[in-house]
Structure formats: C-alpha cells, structure tokens
Image (cartoon, rainbow, N blue to C red):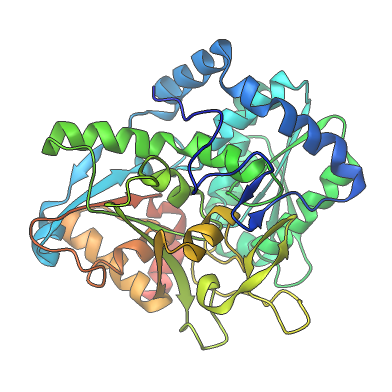
Amino acid sequence: MIMPSTQNTSPYQVNEHGYYGQFGGAYIPEMLHRNIEELQQHYLDIIYSDDFQQEFQSLLKDYVGRPTPLYYAHRLSEHYKTNIYLKREDLCHTGAHKINNTVGQILLAKRLGKTRIIAETGAGQHGVATATVCALMNLPCVVYMGEVDIERQSPNVKRMRMLGAEVRPATSGSKTLKDATNEAMRDWIANPTDTHYIIGSVVGPHPFPDMVARFQSVISEEMKWQLKEKTGKELPDYVVACVGGGSNAAGAFYHFLDDTSVKLIAVEAAGEGVHSGKSAATTVLGRAGVLHSSRTLFMQTADGQVVEPHSISAGLDYPGVGPIHAHLFDTKRATYLSATDDEALQAVLQLARLEGIIPALESAHAIAVLDRIGAGPSDTVVLNLSGRGDKDLDTYIRELKL
C-alpha cells in the first residue's frame, strides 16, 4: 500500500490551511465548528494509524473486492485507434467506487465515538454504499435524497431500505443532489455530538475534500502497478473520468497529479447542451463562490444564487465541483470537457455492444469523449469506469426505446 504523504507538498494537493490554491477552506456555521475542528485535528492521525490501515485494507480486499481489474478493452481500442484500459470500479461491492470512501469514513466515525450516520446521495450509489457499511458496523443510517432522484433511481432507494437505512426525501429547490446536501448539513447542525456525516464526494468543508480523495486514491494507486504489469510502465498518457462533485476523478488522478506527462481529462455533464440552460458543465458556466461550506466553482446567478443544474445522470446533476477540481481547472493541470445526455446514452450502447459491459450513466459521459481527447495509436488511455448500469436500466429502457 502506497501511503499518500500526510504532509502534502504537491501544488495540486490541499495545503495546511485546507485550501487548493484559492479554493477550499471551511465556511461553516458556528454550530459545526466543534465537529469540523475534531475532524481537522484527528483525521490524518487516525487514517494513517496501523490499526486503522489494517482494518481498512482488509475490508477493501475481502469486502469491497479490491484490487478491481484493469481491463484492456480490445474492441473499444480498435474503434478509437488507441489503447484503452478500463479501471473496473463498476465491479466493487455495491456497483461503484463510492464504497472505497464509505468504508474509510465509517471506520473513522467509530474511532471518533459517533453512534449515528447521515449521508446525502444523488444517483443513490453513495447512499447504498453508506447504508451497506452501516449495516456492516451496526450503526443507524439516514440518507437524504432529492425527491426527483428518488423517482429516477428507484432500485437504489429499495436497496437502501433493504439494508436498513431510512431514506428522507429533500423536497425543496430542484429536489436533487444539491438539496439533499442542504438537508444533510441541517441535520448535522442539529445533531453535532453523536452524528458523523459521510459526505460522498470531494466537496464540503475541509477536511472532507482531502479525506474523500485519500480514500479514493486507491484507484490510481492500483492503476500504476497494474499498468506496470501490463505495459511495463507505470504512467499512462491519459486518465479519463467523469465529474459531478468529482470523487472518482479525484481518486483516478491522485497519484498522477505531479507527473505532468499524464494528461488528466475530466468530463462534466453538458445536459441538453452547455448553453441550453439545462446543463451541469460547471467549469464552463460557473464562477468562484462558496457552495456547501467551501470556496469552489459553481453555477450561480449575478447575485450569487445557485443555478439549478440538469443532467440525465443523477450522479452528475450537481451545480459545482469539488475544490480540488476548481484548482486543477484553474491551474490547467486537468482538461475539463463535457458530454450531453444524448452522447452519454450513445456511449452506453457503444460499450455494451463492443465490450459486453453496461456502464452507469455517469461513467458513460467519460466514454463519450474518447474521440475528442487526441489519443493516438501508441498512446495508453485509462478510463475510470466508476459504476455499473443496473441502477439506470429504467432510464435506458425509456430513452433508448429498448
């Protein structure tokens, strides 16, 4: 296990004040100071302690099913005339990368003496992953989910309930991920002593963006040694991942950030078109401000009100990006592209028919840009396949007229 350094010296990682360049920080109400300060003071010591790492690594191996395969996609590679490897996070227990983080955070919560867990979820994958580890550790679990997302991700709602979680609908605003996050924050403010809030992405106040990125960094750690085994070299030419809040991309990019020969490609949801008024392409449409307790880029009106995002994918339907992504965009270390709803749907069919893999709608956005990244016949492309498509079957049946 490569341990990320507890003290970051990289210009692309969080600094000792909780900032990535000009982005990040902890803009929190006074009621949350105690919780956040407790996390800030203890999270690194706890997660790099021997007993934590022993339990964490054991669960990643035997429960989550790590390492996940790095699969050479022959037919996809032929089609795009390059060499494409898929990092199969879709094969994790619960069907997505989200569980890497929830396993880590539940172990942290136990060591902090917390007895109740809350979470927010968009597509439902983080909700399922949180409900799963709560069942495993025998802790009560409340998951906040937008009413609209409850409708369009019904299988995951049923899974959460089977696992013993209470799913509470967020009924304000656009009734999606942003609103679920607001409700979860309110709950945490009301229950600061016994409750740990497992944030599912690299968003929120410091230390959450850094903590979630560290738990997800196992993705790029495995990519390096798996690539070495398969190609003789650790570094690919491109790493491609979709971005909503940005946890799977943060994990896929983590161990390559300082290797500037590796081109990092993040793919946002363009919805019905970047400038259609129904989009979630934050880096194009957003500007700096404070969203969900950190300074980042998000879509906002002239007077700073959050603009409602739109994506066919519930997991990318978020008006901002995590501060690490705002910084990678700002410094041009990563390139941010976007794919429309229709392009993502076509990418789902393409992967299903070329490789026999049905991806999640989120991950399909990454596949949709493969013809735009400029990879040539001698290049190696690693695409993080962040989740599987079971949860999206209703959407596929409806939209693809199956």
